[in-house]
Length: 552
Image 1 (cartoon, rainbow, N blue to C red):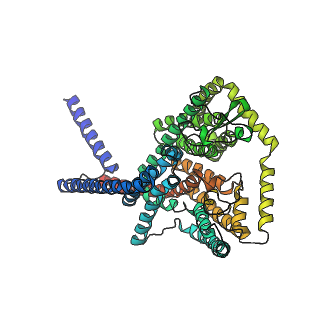
Image 2 (tube, rainbow, N blue to C red):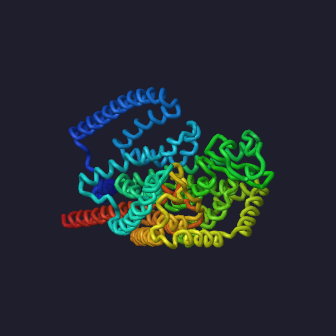
Image 3 (tube, rainbow, N blue to C red):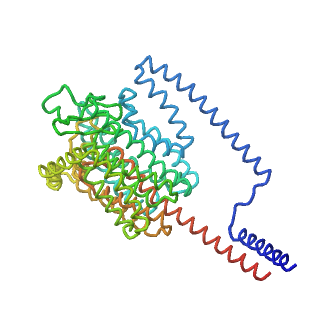
């Protein structure tokens, strides 16, 4: 009898504890049968709309492709047919367009040359971006939401845009009046597009990443892309070393030291491989070798953020080989800037994000990472030594600081009589199809040449505004994981905002990743606020339930 009474008391206590747990852990209320049926009908309707739209687009694309085939052949027909399909779908489904845009970017160089290297394909990524941007702009206008987010960036943006507009009208416009054989206004518009064209990506990220789940999908997608591209980069190097791809052969003189499309090896574009001359420049999956270098540098920030921030232990483990592949490609690709900056920024990120102090998490990660690197270095000691010697030799022959000072002096000498510069796009490589351009291999001297000292001051005001607001934003994030990720993004923003060695902000992938990181950081702040707001609300609800249960 006593035992049965004790069991009865225990069962009552367990029931009470289960009830209290149910009360304390707020769950989504169960949907009624009517609501479930409504959701199913909505899903069926959306599927039908999608299949109907795809059917119409396929028909239109095939028809347009046939017409363009007779006009310009397959090189015009294929991009034209794909273009109408992609543009429409991206406008209709901007969130999917965002992910497609991010996926396509690192493979753009490979796709371009697989499809014949058509100049139209150079703009293919904009077929994802522009319709998505227009859709978001229309939604913001309809709902009365600001298009420039956060609002604090509005003034710096308009200051820079006004300065660029003054140069476009007064300098490029004047050049247009006396132009023959070129289009200075067109050069200026392309230059403006390169300088600020992807600024709206901040807004797209801010509105299209709805919640924390969407954010982690984007973060993990980036890790997967780095993994795939890293593996392809190693395969490319292996194909060259075993002779499947011949590399740079049949040339002499200066051609032995220049990347060429004739040496292309399955992936990416222009390639240089003359190991007997001690020169290797691999493009990975990109158009040119130095774009691959900046992809690897960018990948350091994304993989590091995922290793120390992702809530899933599985994805943290997956991110480790991704970072190891970044390091390995920095060595074998022959890119000196990647070899220098990848390890340096890895160490700096440990300090900036405070992970050095977190020994419990830090030691296993670094231990596993170090093991992978030791194996890779032990397998290729000669390659590692060659890359280090190449880097030291290049530094001694042309120190970066001397090179930057020289470029500043040349640009200042060219524009000392013109505070608005020599014209937008006049030092932008992609604008050379519309007019003459000057090659300037450092970023701020290039900006100085194009939009003058007034434009440089406006640009510095703009990027400083971004950097300061981003810093204040990440510091306010309370969630530890999101804060570490935001710190990594802020470090990348800081680095690119003031970097002047070469011009990564002008071309893929940094021309996209810079704005992508800004958008991610500001969205993380919103996600954090919503999560903590919900936690506070649930906490109050639990307290209320507790008070009710004690009073009863």
